[in-house]
Length: 498
Ligand code: AHR
Figure 1 (cartoon, rainbow, N blue to C red):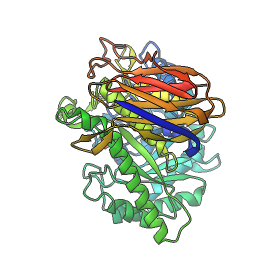
Figure 2: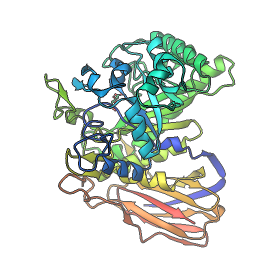
Figure 3: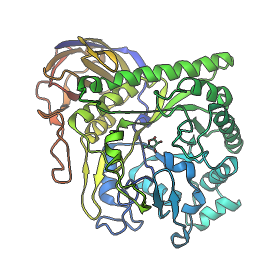
Figure 4: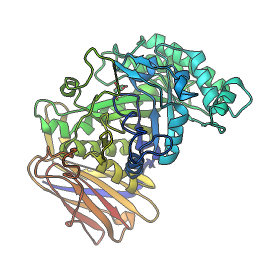
C-alpha cells in the first residue's frame, strides 16, 4: 500500500502531556515482590529495591505511577503498610487470592518513585471502606506536620509530606469481581461525598471518579452519566480502562484495536460533556485512561498460580508479548496522544512482571518485553504539541472494529524538533509512506527506527531476552519537505526530525 500524510503545524490538538506516559504498580503477583522489590537481589539498594529494574523503568520513560491497585485496593487497609516492618500484618488479598506481607507500603514506594523520577497517583479503597480512611490516608500522605497522622508519618521516617496530587476514588466499582462492587448510583454518591471531603482538606487535589471497567460492560455509558451526575462538581477526571488481545487468530482486527480505543474515548468525552451541559457547568471533566494494554485474559488465567492456595507473590498475569502486541501497544499510545485535549493522564497497566513491559527473574536478570520499545521511544521523542495528521491511506475491513485505515500516524512538534509515529497494519505488504513536513520546518532526520520481525509472534523471553529490538529504518529520507519511509508489514515506526 501507499499512503500520504500531511502535517500542518497549525493543526494543534493539545500539548504533549507528560502524564500520558504513566504506568501502574499494583500489589498483584510479582509486580512489587520479586519485581521492583527483592532485598536479596544482588542489585538491591538499602530499601530492598532492585536497581536493575530502576534502570529499566528510567529508560522506559514512565511518568506518573498509579498505586497500589487495581482490584487490590478495594480490600486494602493502608495503615497495615506503614510503620515498623516487623509489626506489619500479613493479610489475605481476596482480589487475587494471595497473601500480602505489607513489606512495601506508601513510604517505601515513595522512595522508589524518587529513584525513578516518577509522580505518585494514589488510589483509595472505596470497596470495603469509605470517607474516613480516605481522609486519614490523605492526612498521613500530605499534611506537613503537627497532626496525629502527619506526625505518625514523620515518626515512621518520612519527614516531608508526599504531596500526592492525583487520587483515584476506588477502582472498577462497576465490576462484579470488585470487592464491594456497587451500582452507579451508590458509587456516585460515595465518590461525591469522599471527593467533597478530600477537597475540604485540599482544593488543589485532582480526583478521578471510576468510569466503567471496560466499554463492553452492560452499564457502559449509563454508568459514566450517573456517576458524573453525582460527582461532577467535585472530581476532575473520569477513568477509562481497556485491554486488547488477538481473538481466534484474527490479527487484522487486533491490529486495529486503536480504532476501538478512539471510539471509546469519544463516547466517554461525549457523555461527560452531556452531563456538564445539563448542569450548565463551564467545567470540563477530562479522562484518566488509567489502565490500558494488551492482555490475554482468558488464556493466561489458566496458568496463573491461584488455585486454592494462599501464596505470597505468585506468578500471575505474566503475559509474554509478541511483535504484533508491541505494534498494537505503540498504536494505542498514538491514539492517547491524539486525544491529548481530553485524555490528560494515562497508565500503561502494568509496569513489572504483571502484564508488563519489564520482566524479572528472582535472583536473576530483568529484561525488556517487546512492548517496552514503542513506549520508551515515544516517551523520549514526543515533545511540544500534538499535531493532527491528515492521513490518505487505503482501508481494510475488520470483523471486530469495522473499517480501519491500513496506516495510522501521529506527530508531535516542538520548537527545535519534531517526531512522527506510524504503524503499518498490512499483514503481508510493506507500505510506502510520504509525509509532508514542510510546515514543521524540519531539515533532517535525527533517527528512524522500526519494530518488526518476519515472525510477528516473536517474543523476548528469559532464554532470549533481546530476540526483538527496534532496528534503524534506513529507508527514511527527508527531501524538499517530504519525509518518505517504507514500513514493513505489521510494524511500528518512529522518526525523529531536527
Ligand atoms: O491490571 C489488572 C487488573 O485489571 C486491575 O487490578 C483491575 O483494575 C483490572 O480489572
